[in-house]
Image (cartoon, rainbow, N blue to C red; front, side):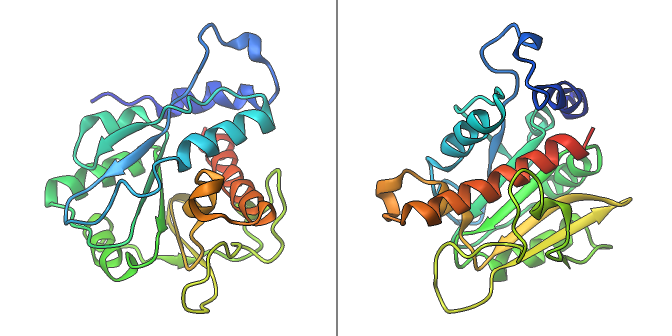
Length: 225
C-alpha cells in the first residue's frame, strides 16, 4: 500500500519555518477533493481549494500546489494526500470497500475535512458510521487548538453563509487522541473560499473563511507528524 502523508507532513512542517530552500520543486505538497457516489455534488465550489492553497502559501511562504487533485473514496491514491476535502449539498453513499479504505487512510495518518454546503448533514452522518461504527462525531469546543493557530477564533467556527439561522458547528472524530476528521456545518467555509465574484461575500467575510481554512491546514500539517 502506498502511503506518503506522514513523510510529507514531517517535511512540510519545515515549510512553516520559512525555509524554501528545502524544496527543489515549485510545489512540495498536494491536497485533494473527495469524489463520492450517491448523486451529491462532490464537485461543488471548484475554486475553493485553489484559493485556500494560495492563501496558505502567502501566509506561510509555503508550497501547496493550488492545482488540487480529485480522488475517489475507494482509491489507493488517497494515501498520497495528507489532506482531503469533501463538500456538497446532497446524498452521499460509501460502499463497504470505500468505507474500509477511508478508515485505513484516516487511521494511518490522513485527514478528512467535510464541509456541509447545506443539505449534506442527514446523508453524511450515517455514512460516517460505516467508516467508524465505534466512534461518534464529537463537538469541537472553541478552546480546541484548531481555532487558535495562526489566526485566533475565540468563539470557534465562524459563520460564513446564513441559511436557517443555526449556529455554526464543528465536529470531530478522534482516534488515539488525534483528530482525524473534522466536519463543519451551518458555516459554509468552502463558499467563502471560492472566487470573490461567485457569492459576492464582503471581503471581511471571505477573509474570515480563508483564515479558518488556513488554521485547519496548519493544524493538520503541524500536529500529524
